[in-house]
Length: 150
Image 1 (cartoon, helix red, strand yellow):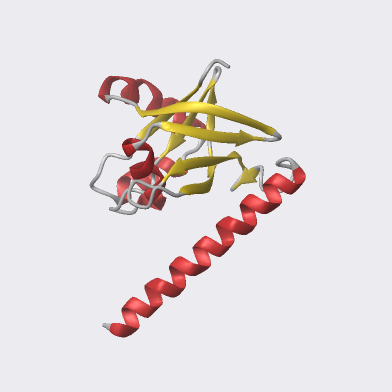
Image 2: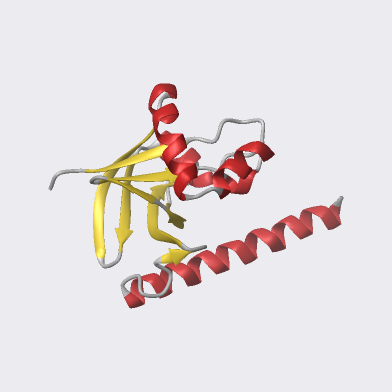
């Protein structure tokens, strides 16, 4: 059991290190490096930790939707929702970085009706999300990020 916990701690540390490096390269190059993940455009999402109150930065792929950004809380098809999603549910005021632009925004999970409209378009553009949905019993949330008029 102690070995399993140590393995989880090491994995978590490696993921956090990768994410920090990704965010640094993204910012240093204005998204020229890190502005694409797995062949999809990427952004940096900044949320406030629901327990810690600390800012959390996560590189994520997105799908453009007019002036909005769609994020998919797939967590690779895990049965556990990603921490970034849990954070924005607790506090929907977020910041996104797209290229060199930093944008204040409100993030909300699409309701059932909106998700049903968006999901086919999402999987048409990024088929991996359909396979992630098949891997888990939870409905993978679609998050709509809307910039706040400044």
